[in-house]
Amino acid sequence: MVMEIVGDSMSWAFFCLAAAILSAILLTHKRVHRQNKWKLPPGEMGLPWIGETMEFFKAQRKNRMFEEFVQPRMAKYGKIFKTRLMGSPTIIVNGAEANRFFLSNEFKLVKSSWPAASVQLMGSNSIMEKQGDQHRCLRGLISNTLSPAGLEVLVPKICNSIELHIEKHWNNSLDRVSLYHSTKVLTFSIVFECLLGIKVEAGTLSTFERILDGVFAAPLAFPGSRFFKAKKARKEVEKMLREIVRDKKKKMEEGREGEDELGSLLSQLLGGMIRGEIREEEVIDNVILLVFAAHDTTSFAIAMTFKMIAQHADCHNLLLREHIEIMKQKTEGESLTMEDVKKIKYTWQVARESMRLFPPIFGSFRKAIVDIEFQGFTIPRGWKVLWTTHGTHYNDEYFEDPLKFDPSRFEETIPPYVYIPFGGGPRLCAGYQLAKLNILIFVHYVVTRYDWSLIYPDEQITMDPLPFPSHGMPIKLSPKSRV
Image (cartoon, rainbow, N blue to C red; front, side):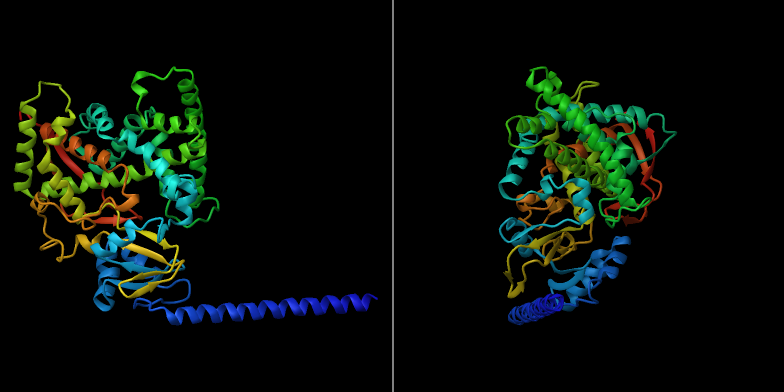
C-alpha cells in the first residue's frame, strides 16, 4: 500500500514537472513568436539584467548622461533606441513629438515608473503612484492652493520668508554664503511654512534630507546603508506628520482653524480627508513627496540662474534695471505683490534659459501598459520608456545654437513639449508656479540688496542622482550702499 502511494506520488510529481516544463517551453515560444512580429527600435541590450546600466551610471555621476550616453547612441541609432537599464528593457526617446506622445498618453499607454526605493520612501499613496481618477482627485486638491488666487496669497508669505532667511543666514555670514545650500534651507521653509502651513522645528530639515538621500539608492535595508537610514528617517517623519495631521484635522472639524492657516495645502488635503475623498496615509505621503519635489530642484534652478547672471554682465545689467524699476514704485519695507511679480519678465526669461541649459531633472521613466506603436517601432507592454529634457533643450532643430546662453529665445512662444524642465501632460509638475515665485522673488531680494560674485566661476555640476554644484556654489557678497 505504501509503495502504491509512493508510486502514485512520484507519478504525480513527474506529471507536474513535465507540465511545468511544457508550459515554460510554450510560454517562451509564444514570447519569441510575439517578439519576431515586433519591430523593436535599434540598439544594444548588453548583458542579461545589467545591460548598459554601468555606462548609464558612469555618465550620470559626471552629469554627462546626455553627452556621453544618449548622444552617441542617437548618432548611431537615431532619436529612438533600445537598451537595458537596471534590469529593465528600456526605450529611450528624444524630441518634441516623442515628448508629446508619451507625456500626453499617461494612463492610456504608459504609467509613471519609479525605482522601488523611491516608492517606499515617498509612499505608495503619493500622487506619483496614483493613476486615473485618484491622480486627478489629488492633483485637484493641490491645484486649489496653487490657483491664481492662492498664489496671490502666497507672494507676501514668500517675501517674508526670504527676508527672515537673509537676515538670519546672510547678514552675519562674514561676506561668504553657500548659495545652493542656503536656498535648500529656504525652499524647505517656503514649502513647509508658506505652502503647507506647518511650522519648521529644529532638526526637521536634516531628517527630511536623510529620506531624500535614499530615494534613488538600492533598496537594501541593511544597517548603515543609505536606504536603511532613509527608512528610519521616514518613520520619524511619519510620526511627526501624523500628530500634526490629526491635531489640525480636529481643529478644522471643531472650527478652530487659525485665519493664517486657511487655504494652506495641508488644509486642502485635510478637507479632502474629512469629505472622505482621501485617507490619512495619502495626506502624509503627499506632504513628503511635495518636499522632495520642490527641495533640490528649485534650489538647483536658483543656483544655475545666478551662475548665468554672474557669467553674463549684459544680462546682469538688464535684470538689475528691471528690479530697480519695481523698487521705485515701492515704499521702504513694502513687500512685493503678485502684480509686481508679473512685471518681472526679463528675469523669468533668464531663469527659463538657465533651466534649459541646466534642467533640474534629466527626464523620467514611464512603463508601457499596452503594446505601443510609435514611429514604425513596437514598444512591448512592460518595457520602460525614458524621455529626456536634453533631447529637445540641446537640439538645434528647436533652439538655434543650443549651447549658447540667450534669454531672448523666450521672447517668443516656445512650441509645446519642446521646453520641458517641469515635465508635461497629466503629470506636469503641479508646483511649477510656486517654483517660479520662489526664483523671481529670491532674485529680486538678492540683486537689489547685495553686490555678489561667484567664488568658483567654473564650478562643476555633479549628480547624486539629481544635479548640484559640487562646492555648493559659494558666493562673495557685500551689502549695496544704494540701489
